[in-house]
Length: 609
Image (cartoon, rainbow, N blue to C red; front, side, top):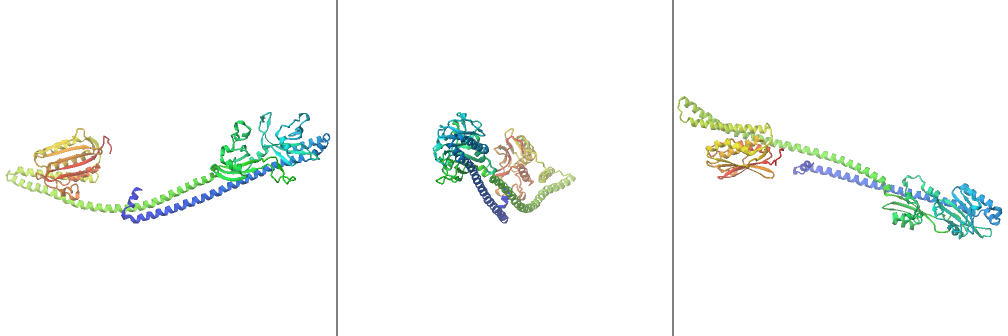
């Protein structure tokens, strides 16, 4: 991708860059429209879904409120029926004659309705006159005085058609909460004789669990286990956990309240009859249950009265986890879909850009190959000219002096023979050096020389090369000095470096004046090894220095003893050093000598390539 970007940024590729830019803009616009549309649609779905939850919670609580009020209405109707019954009126007129009728009526009510634990008639002194325990009539000797019970004296204070409803609590026997738990509500109202004299109270002990069961049982799964039934102080009759329930009945659970858990939410619920609001904890819906609605029945004032401002709270809470469950799932699905679509679009964009990239790359490669081919043809022509020129001279000398040598041998004229043979030998050596370098260079160009670097001692190799050239140097009284530490190892192709060192030392000897000196040295730094071959010879002019190591600009000159170069040695050196990923260069000043240097990567003791 980086290469594609680099090619597209080139000045000559403006049209392709515009193409890629426009393609990217189309992709970004389409992606932005898709994301925006998805967000709007999902938020709309979320709002519709949340409204559905609000409506469901409202409907469920309205149904629960109606069910509870129906139960209370039924129990209150039974209470008022007994209080105004003819058998009770007759009882106050003739107790002895109508007590059995009174018991039978109370028994029939308890037996057929099955919602009362006890049905009782208590006189003005607090003594039970009739008590029905579920489906049995309690005998006279087991009747008890209830004058100290709160429901007796609270209800006896009421007027006609006023109803006392006790708090919904757990039944207590002998100071202990009855087990299993028995929720209970006591309905009571005063009773009067024909002269409108208050004679006692009728009390119904109603099974509170019936109301709780009607509150709990529902078939709407949207708010499953989210309903709560509380008293006016915020204690749970029915909560999300049984451990929270009936806290006001236990000393160790008095702080287990709705307010303690939900804080300011309870303040809003307690202060208002009904409402619906959303907090960080979820969607709250609540209604207030007044056990006896005002339109239940009428008295002289038009209303059935309750002895106190008693009420309950029914609450539903739908946590955000439930509220957002489907929305979160849709978001995950949408993100996955968008991600897959974006990846697909990116792949398409990448393939289109890649196609353009390879098209441009192919065109550039064709242009580069054309340029390279032209350069190779030009180099080949120049190289052939150089080789032809360098080969003709030594062979002309060899042929010319061999003819003269042959003629003089016929005439048995031996004058100058030694000089002729020396010239023939020198010309043959130059031709051999040229052919040898040409062979090495051609093998390198066609890849016949395998590059196999090894770790070896450079000092030993250079001393060997110096030894081979010592005789040539001694002819000109030139001293060759090495300044290389012992055990100086390098990681390189041994034969290639040997050719480079031999060529550089040979050139240094060739261009050094008699009694001069050639110094071969080496040093290491953090990244590379630098080998130097320096002489104090004739030096190289800046004009010729710039032409070194270039095939197309090959330049040869005579040595200090009229030696001739082959013209290929430095090109071969450059090629071999570049195969090592090193560099080769020359520093020179006319009349003061030259210094040829090449570098090799520092192996740092590792045998890697």
